[in-house]
Image (cartoon, rainbow, N blue to C red; front, side):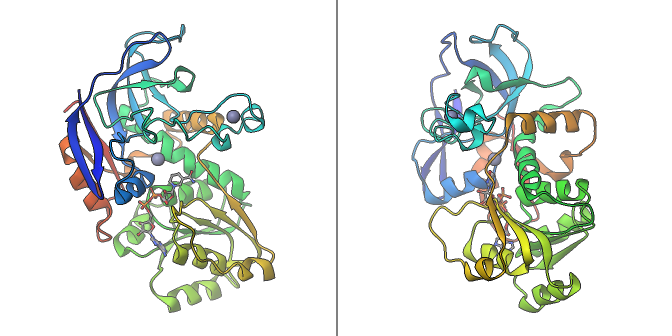
Amino acid sequence: MKCVSIKGIKEFEIKDIPEPAIDGKNVIIDVKKCGICGSDIHYWDMGQPVGLVMGHEYSGVVVDTGDRKDLQVGDRVTALPISPCGTCDACVTGNPQYCSKTWLNATGLSLTNPGALASKMAIRSDMVIKIPDKVSFEEAAMVEPTAVGLHAVRLANIKVGAKVLVVGGGIIGLTSAMFAKKEGASFVVVSETNDLRGRKAVSLNVADEWVNAKAEDALKKMIEKTEGGFDVVIECCGNSKAVSSALTMVKEGGTVILVGVATKPIEVPTMLAVMRELTVQGAIAYTREEFETCIDLIANKQIDVMKFVDKIVTLDKVQQSYEKLTSGNSEAVKILVDPTI
Ligand SMILES: NC(=O)c1ccc[n+]([C@@H]2O[C@H](COP(=O)([O-])OP(=O)(O)OC[C@H]3O[C@@H](n4cnc5c(N)ncnc54)[C@H](O)[C@@H]3O)[C@@H](O)[C@H]2O)c1
Ligand SMILES: [Zn+2]
Ligand SMILES: [Zn+2]
């Protein structure tokens, strides 16, 4: 079958790989939609590991039920891409997202478990979740990044009336901003280096305002406007400038949630956190309950995730789509891939 795999730095190749084998354990699905994620971009940037088939935000139809007695061929599903051990402290307390094993064999993020940039994939059966008929395949592929936003916002403990800044207006920033508003934040701002994405955060109605992260004076004005800074800042970029601005823009005693992934150590002014007694909290992925909550919210039309989808492309347009998403001057935020066309 056809798949897209990493060939080198910023380079994919389309190649043929064997279809996943039926083993009576894993569930095999025909992939219908797969999202391109900001985390995937880090792997593509590094060109490592060569041969990785990405795609961890997916939906599809069951073609083999593996060891799941409650599933049938033809069921419409999505799945958590993680691979928790199930027995460690993190797993037994309902936090598989930080189990030390969870990312080692994650689907679409490890060589052992190829992802959804292919026509078929095998998924660890206990991670598979059926989707209601009223949730489309496109919406189901959006559950994963949406759940990242929900988890970050839950960890932030946003109070009704709070002022919240989201640094970075990619899909993770936009879903975080959306949930911050739902939690009752009275003023939600997105800061961006890309004007088009900044404006988009406002036009999609997830932010009240956006601020140009490249303009020092605009950031200063925002601190004045919020009378000393934001109650909560959710950092969704992972670079030194972005994390530094998160620590600067939060008020004394406030909370900074770090969602952005820095693949190398970065320089950060920790003095700002020490002297102002900030709470700095990391956020990784989601719990199973949060993943399922996002499916329910979509099914019940309480959130609209399709407004974030810019385009649906074929496997041979994946390379081009990555280039577009990283150009810094495109307003596209989420591109879905359809391996069936
Ligand atoms: N912790 C988690 O569970 C988790 C899950 C998914 C993604 N991530 C990470 O979160 C980050 C965001 O993901 P995404 O898919 O939205 O990525 P993305 O690359 O689409 O979005 C990042 C945005 O940040 C903007 N940006 C860069 N520097 C900035 C700065 N100094 N100030 C303001 N904006 C700036 C960019 O213009 C871009 O629009 C990535 O690092 C990704 O790896 C973390
Ligand atoms: Zn993702
Ligand atoms: Zn575990």
